[in-house]
Length: 460
Image (cartoon, rainbow, N blue to C red; front, side):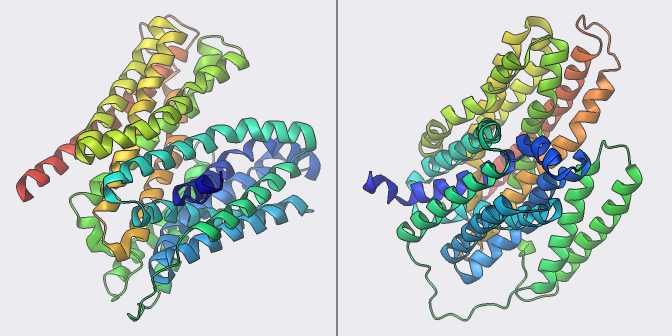
């Protein structure tokens, strides 16, 4: 047992599990928090929004800090901050102090998200790195899937504070394992570039405003969305211009001109948006369209995370054997076929059609995620691996936020009626439209793969 715990991948798995749990475990506790603080749900939702905004806005910065000051050091600091903020949340006496602590928890989660893959790339031989990325993808899926059920048990037994107590204990254990197992950073004698503080301010504030604007889509107040979106765009544009003038930028924009990196990031956004569509639309269709009860709905929804868990490590072995380019393509083909199936088969076959299509889609996602992660990090310069890992996590978060914000309104639009669907009013037509949009995103991702393959053929 001691030998297992002391393996670096076990330590990195713990650091992967925590932010995934943090993303999903608190949602189920929101009603209990609303009662405890006598606050409306619209205010209590900031407990979730604050975490997501912090992760999205700071994940690239965390990756760059790891490149400059040592990935182990920054990963440990993030884990410690996550644990301390969790302990503080357990003791919070007011809603807004809890929101502030939850936001700090998101800052720590950003460091863990940005640096676990980068450190796996540092520590695991390239020939076996696909298996490592597959394992970490599996752990992340487990954390996301486990969050709601674990949170529900804790809230039912001991109240919402137990959720934060559990995260604090888990973070303390993870910190101890990381401290004992991970090798020290290689500092060397080379002078360290100056930290790009203006770049951090511009990028983080722009991403924070953009993430919050996206979280308000569909809430009926488009003036708020526009009022946040325009300054976000201006800040991000100013960031790009500023990065072109500094000698040691936060994000080396030349990385984004790589014929492998920018398609891989865009593909990650598109596929994450497709996966989020299943989470946003699925409960409505299964309950209202197929008339399933909550237990049956939950069981069918668990097919997706279950497939990702089962396929993660085998997908890593396939990546190590057949190469990243081929497995990226296979994963995208499966995800696109699954999206087309989701548009058609549930309306024709009911729950069995839904399960088959969802399994195909999420299997493609698991294969793609593992292959794409290995491809991007293997091609990244060693001194920019943390930044690249942060960009990959950012692309995933943007895709998830976009899917959550945009696909609900698309489903609502389709639910007004398309001809030829004989189910509960609007349910089938809404599902067809939203997954046709998802399939279109899949075809765009496939087209990007052709660009990568053509570049590989030209460069040899």
